[in-house]
Length: 239
Image (cartoon, rainbow, N blue to C red; front, top):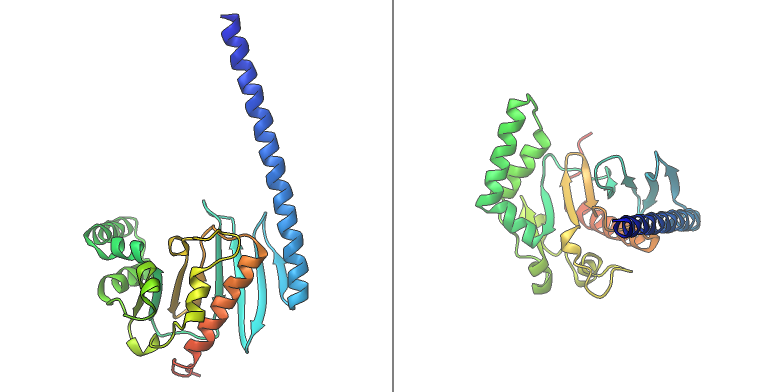
């Protein structure tokens, strides 16, 4: 009995030591990444604004397009988004998401989940217009046959106006979607990357997969590239 207790205590102590090592490594990694962000933002002329905890916002302007990158740790999972309000649509007009996720959401299972969400929201007295608009868009808008075969296997492009996305995805733009630094040869970006254009602006969401500054710089390049190309196709904003 004493031997069992001793082994249990030894295992528990080893677990605490391993946990302390992992926490220390995580803290050192956060400090290194923060120092690299500050250095690169100064070099690139971007403004880094610290938030609560590990959250932060980066402000910048490229090709006359003001934008920001938000890293938010307030929810259950961290989220990283590139956003620009320089171009907007009257309603949700464009959505690019991983093809597997699209098939699930567009199919019967996804529609059942959407219906359940609407029912729960109604019972709770919540009118989530943005979520309902997204559900309706996924259900009704056809997938647009744009991009290469490789791109279409991994991403689905939905657009209310086909002219909005014709010629949008040149090979150089596709590479910004498909190849990401420091994620290995096959980053599977379709699992975490999405793009939307609606009344609040253009947003490129990267979930919680990107943290290195080189990845954030590519997220900015992708957002600015899409914004520049879409700006030529959208009607001028109402004044």
